[in-house]
Length: 254
Image 1 (tube, rainbow, N blue to C red):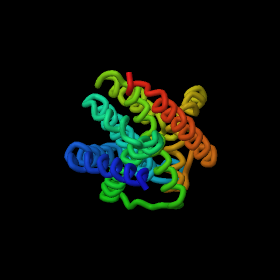
Image 2: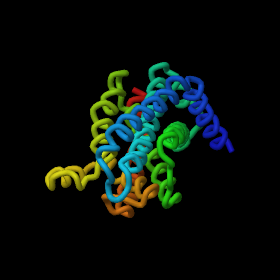
Image 3: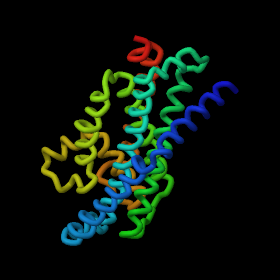
Image 4: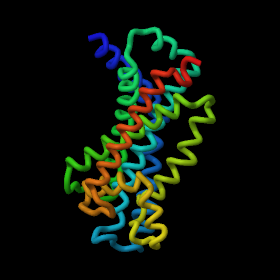
């Protein structure tokens, strides 16, 4: 019972935190998405034609939605947990009889809620430009949920290891953004040369984007079961590593 109360409290705190500042957390992705769809979908996409039998607009919608989920689920956890460390509020969690897995689950769930909420906003914006179809709702929802979990965990690890506010911006700017843009959001991997196709296959975001695209449009450049296996594998590894860091007190007790 105590663990359930602690979990609900953490989730409530995390959710209220980003909703309270919605002009900074929910409004920017809506504006950015509208620009993506206007410039790439309408202006440029109309000249590119179809990709794998679907319009360019339909092709990029899944990638843009998932890209928003990735960035915001990650950002929510890394900023919140590091702020807790920086403001010394983390000491309240350390002295409270709350297991490490509850702390991790609370922060990760907060990141999931923000990621899914932003993804919903982006999906609604996309419908203003093009009707949003869904070929397999179960695959689409599973992919977006697993992706939000994965990058919430990644944000948690970044926050635990970060020693300054600069450290929490390095990964999003120099790792996540390049991997997202090179993850097949705006193009098919088949358009690349054989060398770059091989390199792209080492990008885990490529598998998530294509699995989500398959759920919405039925089109994918990768094997969907493999995409689920890769995503699930990363979740297991990052969960274990996060609990290990909490158990050791790395970046928290020292």
